[in-house]
Image (cartoon, rainbow over all chains, first blue to last red; front, side):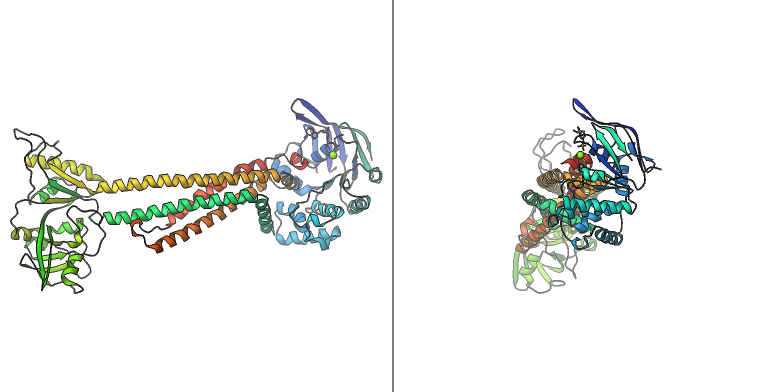
Amino acid sequence: MSIISMSNLYKTYNTGKVKVEALKSIDIEIEQNQFVAIVGPSGSGKSTLMNIIGCLDTPTSGNYLLDGEKVGRFKPNRLAEIRNWKIGFVFQNFNLLPYATAYENIELPMIFNGLSYKKRKKRVMELLERVGLADRAAHKPTELSGGEMQRIAIARALANNPSILLADEPTGNLDSVAGGSIIEIFRELHRDGATIVIITHDRAIADNVPSTIKLKDGVIVDSLN
Amino acid sequence: MKFFLFLKQFYRDLSSQKLRTALTTFGIIWGTASIILLLAFTTGLKKDQKRRQHGMGEAIIILWSGRTGMPYEGMPKGRRIRFVEEDPEYLKMMIPEIAMASPEYTNWSSTIKYRDKIYINQVTAGNAEFGEMRNLIPKPGGRYINPNDIANKKRVAFIGYEAKKELFGDEDPIGKIITIDFVPFTVVGEMIEKDQNSSYSGSDRRKTFIPYTTFTSMYNRSYLNNMVVKPHESRQSDYVKRRINEVMARKYRFDPKDEEAIWEWDTTRGDQFFDNFIFGMNIFLGMVGFFTLMVGGIGVSNIMNAVVEERTKEIGIKMALGAKASFILWQLVSETLLMTFIGGVIGLILSGVIIRGYNMLNIEEMGSPVISPEIAILASILLGIIGFLSGYFPARRAAKLNPVEALRL
Ligand SMILES: Nc1ncnc2c1ncn2[C@@H]1O[C@H](COP(=O)(O)OP(=O)(O)O)[C@@H](O)[C@H]1O
Ligand SMILES: [Mg+2]
């Protein structure tokens, strides 16, 4: 069974007079342990698609099944739970809480999940280890490099063992060395069984990812498995 | 760690709004302190005032006879009405709402002697109920005049504490023989000290009280100076006064509508007036404090609005990580509650310090203010409501943010 299954999905933004059809007639199947790259020019609807996959946003019409659950019409609270349990987000601009330490940032999804302090601590340490930043637990984002911040963000995304990891241009704000090491982490996670969807502009990255979905003007123009 | 994180966010949210936080906290402190102080002062004042006012007696009616103000049954107006000794009993019999009644005789200038000490002052006479109505309480070891004294025209005296001091100094007066206008009396009781801020015939502390039966055997009097009556319930006083007028009008044959034949002083009136006065003052000052708190609350609300504005992105991040709307809501509400709580506690401590300092000054006229549990509870409830409301609306706005739009910032 697919982790993600979308059929005939539309997303229309209604900004006053103008209607923007950001996604049109989208059909997608993503399997367990697939590594998918979403590519396409700016404004083609990549982020919109990603937000819908991540249950941050809901489609205007069409079907979306996540882990077999029809999430398209869920209430905000249920969507929050889904995001917390099943989705791990990584953003281009890291989106770490600036006043909180690396440790506290990673801990956050587990707080929302109601985990005990002991369990949280164990998991945070594991994750810090995993992204190679065990010695940075007490550092604030401003005391970390871009690459380090993104690694903390990845650790945070993994906190509740999500079904799927979503990354919206995770290397967009990084130099090529740091970007490379981030991609390397994704590859390792994929090897260990993770399902990953990544948006990228970087041809070099996209070419090395097994499957790609190419968007243009809100339509899938090419799908490569 | 979770709580620590909360405090960290709280601190961060407030320090990003330093001036606003300072002003608002000041508003909450000021509002709390003014509400607590005014309630404490008015309660103190009220207690004190009640105590003094009741020095003369609580909820009693004093009755004097006057002259008729209307012609009646062929008799001209201006006819003198005079109460006699039987009248108090008669009123009690006719009006069941009266609990106690006493005649009162006064001799304005009697010579009272103990050994070589001479004290010239008033002698007042009533029955056994007079003492209770007029709040003449004996010191331990002594007693007031009793029904037996009345029935047997006993020569016993109950003395005010100032009269006692003049005659006896520090000596125990109980059982000692004094003379009143050369008639020997045994002192059976000395009045405890009391504050009395109203009177109709001078201060009780300077008087000597004797049975009215003994009084009439010494002085040639056919008429009372006045009567004192007390209804069972103070709220019956208007009815009782009306009935007294009716009963006396029939007995002395004057028009029941005649308002000059009998004069009365209803002390429940004073209580009512003072109660109303305090009540009005409480309302007024309460409003002042309440509005100050409101302004503080609006300040808190403003801070939270600004916090939401500034933290929109962060709220978006939390939502993306799976925070429910209720989490966002309660975090912000808790922050405002904590802010009002801190302001409230400081306000409470401040009022405590002010009240303590004030009480040390010993300004008797204002009574002694106290922070009663009721006042503290009232202030807390008020603060809680204000804190909650001022936090709730900005927080709800935050909780309703669209996560995608919040993140885009
Ligand atoms: N909230 C919104 N309101 C209106 N239009 C939007 C909104 N979000 C995205 N769009 C429009 O939808 C289209 C797709 O946007 P997006 O998914 O962000 O593209 P990409 O991530 O591929 O650059 C764009 O034309 C964009 O202007
Ligand atoms: Mg985008």
